[in-house]
Length: 329
Length: 249
Ligand SMILES: Nc1ncnc2c1ncn2[C@@H]1O[C@H](COP(=O)(O)OP(=O)(O)OP(=O)(O)O)[C@@H](O)[C@H]1O
Ligand SMILES: [Mg+2]
Image (cartoon, rainbow over all chains, first blue to last red; front, side):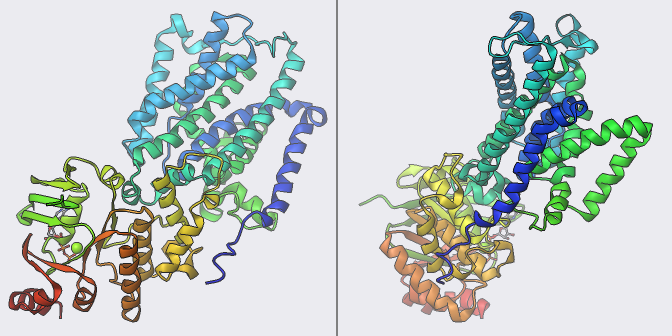
């Protein structure tokens, strides 16, 4: 009985592991100087990683979306249109508008899809993303069709920058967004709202009988997931300097789910770790192993699912001599 | 006359050929503990389902504090002050016992702050106390999926209590609980309900418990209330001995 009031507070044992993560972030921050050739690749990986965190959020409620590239793409296109309307717009404005665009789309789609669960939820998300994809392809006089639209370099806090410094700033922005949004998401998971959201996975009957609308609870996480995908989409669009319908193509959505599972389904840190490793493997394997890199990744995923369901983050955790689920709790 | 806390009028529902509620009209006054007894399949759980909006009756009405709540979804009825513990516990299986209660309290208090930890919410002590009350303090930090049926039933009740309801509906609260513990738990529960001025309705198969803790008994049979009265009188009634007690024994 007396053990109750001295509840195990989880703060203490977390520190050694947090240290590892800090080291990881510092290493990433050194990349532009240590391995400049990796800089752009890591920017792309972190942009994708943010979107993967979005997918991860939904996994926590036991839901899989096969259409979340939609929000990634909407944010990127919103930026491209904004740059066309206001040449020389600022990066901060792009971030704001792109994210709001994704959030708004998340609200519209979310209000509809939160009525469904499981396979229907997943497929409806896919359907919405495919509708948007065909709109992008068909209305080519506005969207540029399959060629997409250019996304010229924005100013940064009013300064027009050369490509080099601009990409460097983008790189560090990606790291900052990873740290801040990753932290917010982890906190949100532990918060009452986030915990209520995660009960969708285990018992909606009880949730309803607590006086909570399960659909609303799901919508709260859905909006967060759309926001995260939106931020990722802005980063990707700006880093690539162009947006194409490929951004919302279903393979992109599937890739996000793939990385989420690879990294450790449900883990925020795993999402970024997964995205980094995925991008590196993809880039180098496709350079050296030609067409079989997808097969290699597929086999790797199989191994993960069969032997390490905790994903890369789980392997990483045990290698670090720590319990797997700290981040996941 | 004062408005009853809960009133049902002519509730009727059939499933296939089975009449699970057959013109049920019942008034439940505030401040009392009503036991519902009756054979398996008599429609006891169905009655609780209809009262909480989980199942919509084909005919009839449910009034809570005089307000017609028949068409409302369960969550709206819960928000008005009705809580429910289930025949089969409905818990968040991937959460600990304490977290189940903390989530209930967060729902009750409308906790919206996204940056506060569930474990740091102000209701923590209150919820630990509730767990202690139902003898589950020692398993506060265990996942409910690991607990015994009896413990899960008690935590399910604690979750319902965490909402601070005016009316608590319990479906066989102590089934699955070790018989040596039943009395103690009911004693504490009924005392706590009286203290908090919570009215309760509980479905019960254990006539000893009914005898001891109910202020009133309603006997269900074939989807309707067959008899209603004080425990002493009802439990002696020949029809009840034949239809209910005989069957249970
Ligand atoms: N949702 C449903 N769909 C179909 N039939 C149902 C449903 N709910 C209840 N029934 C049927 O209605 C009848 C009454 O069931 P109910 O669960 O209310 O009985 P009960 O009195 O609670 O019995 P027990 O003591 O076994 O819990 C049963 O014949 C049952 O099979
Ligand atoms: Mg029943």
